[in-house]
Amino acid sequence: MNTELTRQDAVREAAASGIPAALADLGALVRIPSVAFPGFDTAQVQRSAEAVAALVEGLGLFENVEIRRAAIPDSDEIGQPAVLATRAARNGRPTILLYAHHDVQPVGDEALWESTPFEPTVRDGRLYGRGAADDKAGVMAHVGALRALKEALGEDFDLGVALFIEGEEEAGSRSFAQFLSDNADALRADVIVVADSGNWDARTPALTVSLRGNTRFTLRVRTLEHASHSGMFGGAVPDAMMATVKLLATLWDEDGTVAVAGLTERDAETPAYSEETLRDESGLPAGVSPIGSGTILSRIWNKPSITVTGIDAPSVVHASNTLSPEISVVISARIAPGQPAREAYAAIEAHLRAHAPFGAELAFTDQDYGDAFLVDTSGWAVDTALKAMHEAYGVEPVQIGVGGSIPFIADLVREFPAAQILVTGVEDPHARAHSPNESLHLETFRNAVVAEALLLEKLDARGGTA
Ligand SMILES: [Zn+2]
Image (tube, rainbow, N blue to C red; front, top):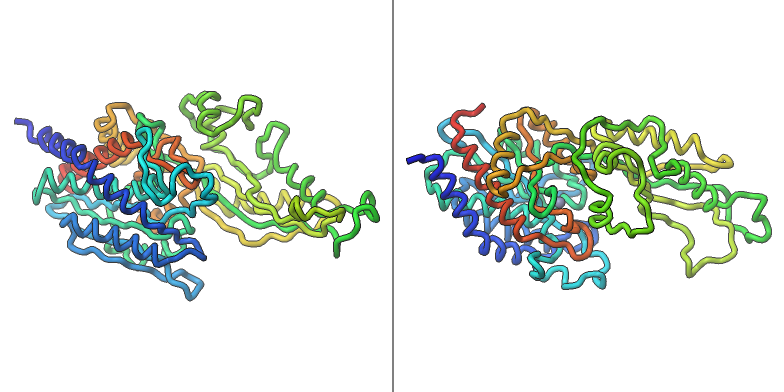
């Protein structure tokens, strides 16, 4: 008898048959509105941490399960509650750290939701609700995989496991680095699984091997000491809106490519991805053209992008015939893997200063930086993870880049430089994380749980620490 095959089959079977229970637990987590943003009820984040801790405790696998918080550096505040659980490796087996987060994005305009955001609802093979995908499904992928391992292998498994379920990822992970250093011994692992990303599509698994960095800041443009009648001085003095529009327009070329000197691109192959798929997944109407140049995925994964995400200016309803003295905008940029976030920010600030029309006065505040990430794909854990995904989904996995950013990964790399980091996830391109009608594709979830359970089994079968 091939015992390895038997173990794998038993784990796969247990993972698949545990899906209904995992979905029921996921539904209960979705009902808790655990938004960690300032101004929201943090008692709900505590409730959510307690619910996660109870699920983890219920696994009966860990020597220690705790809810912990860490201080936010340079402030007198304390971070939101995270769940930390540990089980020591035995017989020279490796240790794996499983990360996900239990806090969620605010719901935004509730009128745009087709079902109540915090009421889990199944429609057309998807589970709808805030956090149903990002990232409570990531939490349940870990729990489901560990349940399967316990059910299939009982006491016969020696893998070390640490579980870290953060409570403030969407709110900027402000105590994350402190949490890592406070709990470094508990969290130290050979392999780290960050289950907070996406898959190629609803049927094809993906391992995320690059992430863009980001920087975000507020720019104030001032051209006048006070507002004036637009008929009195219009045409002779520049208003701040005119200066802002002209200045912002210099950020992009005619075709929408970022036109800021000093921002770099990464030269790497990208898989084929059609304009039709782009239109479908992003909601781009037939008459509106895409922007940028090069392959579509190189534009999203390997080149910078700049977006104006907010503006403070007189509103339409309050518009009067006035020259505005001052306008503020928020600029959010994505940075190609390979370029440090602070370097990219400096290039953008220098560009804006050099292009300020009519000598407009510029002020830069509230800078925020997140570094990009590139996985070293030569490690044994990457191979093992790709194998597990292939077996679970029955489809060859794709190694993907992601246009978004997970800034805390830089903290993980800094604290645990020797660990191999695997960025996985339960989302598919239609998950609409952060947006109204967020949802989880149920078949993807099932496959993701099976894949993670198979990965754990393979690591446990792996003999000594490499
Ligand atoms: Zn997330």
